[in-house]
Image (tube, rainbow, N blue to C red; front, top):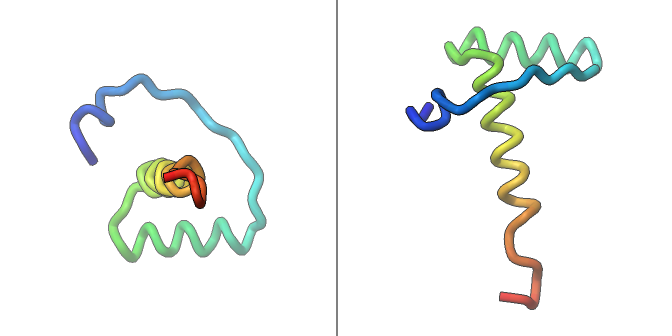
Length: 59
């Protein structure tokens, strides 16, 4: 994780996900030695980058 991101102010996010999805997420993080919070943060950032990129035909 980048130092700038680590020093950034943080807020708590509470959400509900299916039990099986949560189980798979925890298992993935444990087996890949990833902090769950970091995984979720990176997943959200990645998804937002894809969604906020240039629209087709505008670039």
